[in-house]
Length: 178
Image (cartoon, rainbow, N blue to C red; front, top):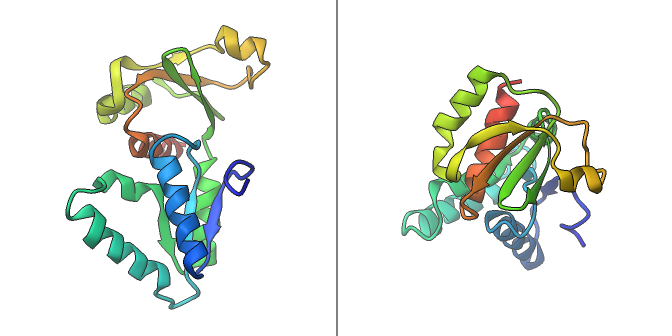
C-alpha cells in the first residue's frame, strides 16, 4: 500500500524496517514493477545516515557490478528539506505519467517536446529503445477508450523493458528541458 498509493517518497533515518522499505522501493522501481517516482533519502541537517547508506551501496553493490551506475539516478540523498521538495516538484515539472500500450511505453507530459529536444532525447536514450525511435504520438485508442489523460502530449517508444533507470534519466532530461 505504501508504494501503490504514493507519487513520491521521502524516507527518513530509521531501523531495519526503513532499510527494508528503502531497498524494496528501489528494487520495484529498478525492475519496473512500480512506476517511476521521485525517491529522496533525507538526513537531518549534517546527518550521515543516508550518505553512509549511499557509500555502502556504491562500494558493495556498484563496484562489484551488482547494480549499474545508472541505478544511482533512482534516488537523491540530501540533508536539505528544500532540496527534497525541489526533487519531488522537479520530477513532475514536465513528466505526468507512464503506461504501456501494446509494445510501446507511453510517457504523458505536461508540455510539448519540440523537434530539437526530441532529436537530442533520441541521441541520448537510444540505448533504452528496443527498436525504432522515441516519437511524439496522439493518445492511443486504448487511452481514449479508458479516458486516460487524453488531453496530454505524449512520447512513445518500444522500451527494452530492462533499463528503468534509463527511463528515470529520460524523465529527468525532459524536466530539465522545461
